[in-house]
Image 1: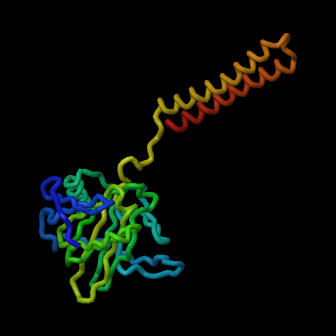
Image 2: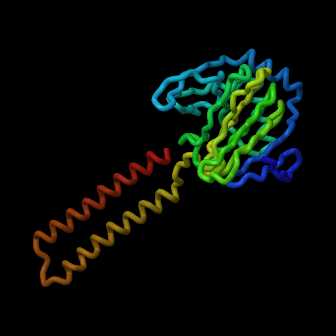
Image 3: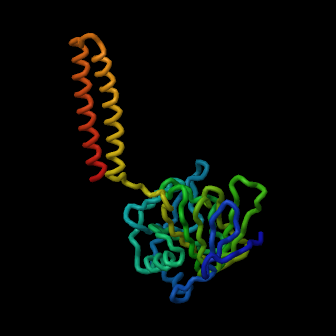
Length: 276
């Protein structure tokens, strides 16, 4: 499929793909030859080949991986749980470079090392819960050119899209791309050199866990207090409208006051914990 391209800003091309927000930088300035960056990453990275669970069966992934990121940015998929390694010098430099190009913040990176034409990545979406509903994913390709394939999840009339990603290119996926599309890298019949793809991931705009503000919590407390007070006042007015207030009614009112006080104390305690 041939794509119509238009430039959003210098070097960043928005691809005309329906139900997706995908952009491409065909060549980024790494500050040194991409082959040197590739060799340094291959040499310095503690690679892993993890078994994954697919349809109830365990298989070794057909590629090597490594997970780096901010503290606490764990990642799980297909039965694998990855704890982040701390950012090293070269990955920090590449992360900062990508952030400056696409104006997004990234908190982690999955390194994928395809050793030859037989290594691949099955079709999937990066839609795990910890990535949020609109994850932002930037992919930098180094080494041999491989074909990145996209398939729409529900619209059969849309043909698969094939993107050739040369060494030094940057692919940016955001918005509802992961909700609507799957992507993968097929095996190749012809031998090729080792390609390398890295993904920088972020939770996406509006998906990070946000602690409630003091104003929000006080509004909730005020609403609950007004609701309880309204119920209590109605009971009191009903009792006043009667000819006399019986001892049982007095006890009920006293119990209601105690209940309001207890609920208020509990809510204030919860507020102090939330805002701590």
